[in-house]
Image (cartoon, helix red, strand yellow):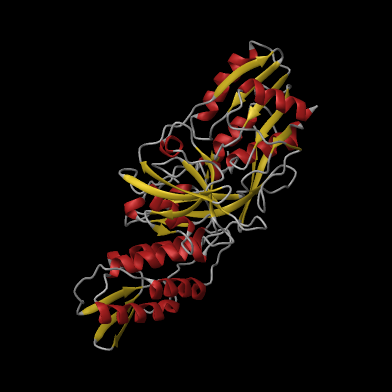
Length: 464
């Protein structure tokens, strides 16, 4: 298989810790990102002395800034990123940073930065330390979060050490079990939450804290623990909702009709559903795939073996509210329905990869109907697009989430995580899920409380 497939590359909205760049097996390289930074420059702001260093041996407070910058310049699908643009975002974040946490002024503030364009950042930080003895670590942490939240694409982000693991590999917010989105009126993803790009719950995972509390798909999140989300970064807001997956979180939402509701939710480890199958009527099989974690291909194979005993002529594949997961898992599942050939292509600056189906699938002849909705994301969109292009499967439902980025997660030296969009993908016919998602062949709203029999009948009616 191709290098990225061997790396178990992720298509996530937002997460799994992984090794450093060398462990991913990718051939993409870049020049060191610290070359334009002087080894050391001494200066002062008022009475606060500070020293600008390069990233050769950064203090722990600057470790994440150095490493994030380098990984972005080496791996991001749109590299190289402008160092001045990233530095400007970091500086603006620092200027807006407020905290009651202070620490004694150091005799000399050691400021390690990845590029000389960050010199103004160091000067501003020294001024803030001089004026208010501000805690350096939290201030730099906020700047790194802003660099990725607001300086990069919506699918590249930094997760601080105290919130590492708050997202699942399939993009679900840990502790509560929600899939979130911030999209403007034309369908573009937004890194910052605003009145024109609100934070919305795409779907709520059944039998988990968010669902048990009463949150619903379509709710708009307006406050978390008393703090308005307007103006905040998408990732930092979502990770604050997840916390460390313990304790409680208060979420205020606006529901259709303008009703404002407050939910106090006790976080817990998520319970994720598994693959299920049914035969709701003679000749018709039903297969529900909840995500694309690495155990899913084996579970799908087992379900299809059971289903084959009933010899269905039509299989309804339910990918609604499937947030995605691993590329490998999506290709393996698609291989059960496609007799070889292309499943998807991915595109990066120095690489173009073709992912092909493995021959020997168990359901390569049956008529296919694929159910999708806005919660159908990333790897689930890959499967839906591939089955339509390669098997003439009929997509029934509503537009999908719209995630066309391939991400790789990196574990950072400070204990945090960085998720980088390293490539984009397209279906076998060259269609992308970006800019509004995949459009179904038959538009159909399916209520979440419908029985399997009702769902299948509605799908068959729409397909006829």
